[in-house]
Length: 435
Image (cartoon, rainbow, N blue to C red; front, side, top):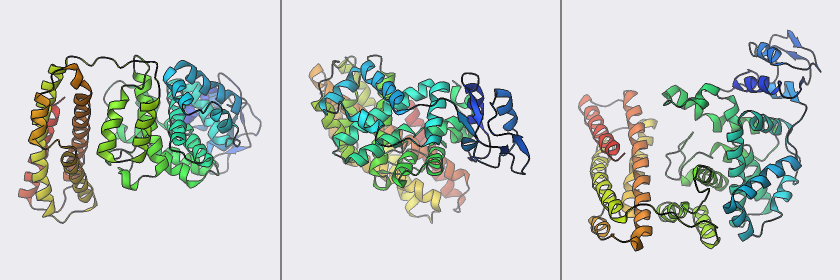
């Protein structure tokens, strides 16, 4: 999805809807890119006028052309953040553990918000309230993680700003893509996954924030294993601030989707992730949660023996995927690869390395799982389950990368293409059987 700040898109639809709730005005004369006057400065804009503007490419960014009469300010934003710490006891508990009761007030008053960014955030609050709620939750968690990592106040403020404005790009995605319950087409998925890049451009063009903030925003959906988006960055190529944002985004999704409204259940994932990825912020987060007294108790996760049997079945399937990946690695090592092929090859290497470093590729783990029968084994079993599912997630990503690469018809003999395609399909069949 391309983004042109002078070309009205889905954001203009949101502005038109907001104009029905509060006054929007032309900040200056608005002309199209050929110099034809469309709206005079000071005109109160209705949804119909904004719709008319949408049929033109403007001579300026729509953010500069249109202004809302009422936007979020430091005090109203602070109230919105405080309402979440009151609603979610776990967030209040983390704040207390960090002795950070005055931190939010300091951050909200640290410096004025860029007008373009705070106006867009206001539109998000009015038009996409669930996204706004997710944004604020991720902002709180980003700030707490940065504080727990003993970052300077300047860096904590950067985490605050980056998290607060990370999803502004979503406002430019067609509402029908955001609201659909159907599986997205590849084109729709690409449009949805473009939002970190759009947010990055909005921040770069609409503020004088440090480059580190824009970079972190672009990275907030990346994954330590390199299976995130939009760039597929791994932990080695991601910024520290980007890793904070991506972890906080993951945690906020978990918190908002938890029926118990708790972060307790993420402890096992964090424990496993520390050993898998060796990322300092994961360790910081795990230690923070381990020392925080959460008001919720861990919920039971079903019959341990039944889960042990399911984990054994997954592990057997993972063994088959491992064998296919080793064959793929061998085939790829013999080929002159283009950039897409090299990226696919690197992901296969990462997946194989994960299997070896976590012990999923050893026969000993099968015997260990077979011995896990009692509730005392539940925590260790959950660690194994999480690692298994993490590997299957990475393996699925490898399949998609490989399948896309083959569709590009890379230069290699037909027999090799068939062999690689067959290995990919066998791997995908096993992954799908694991659910």
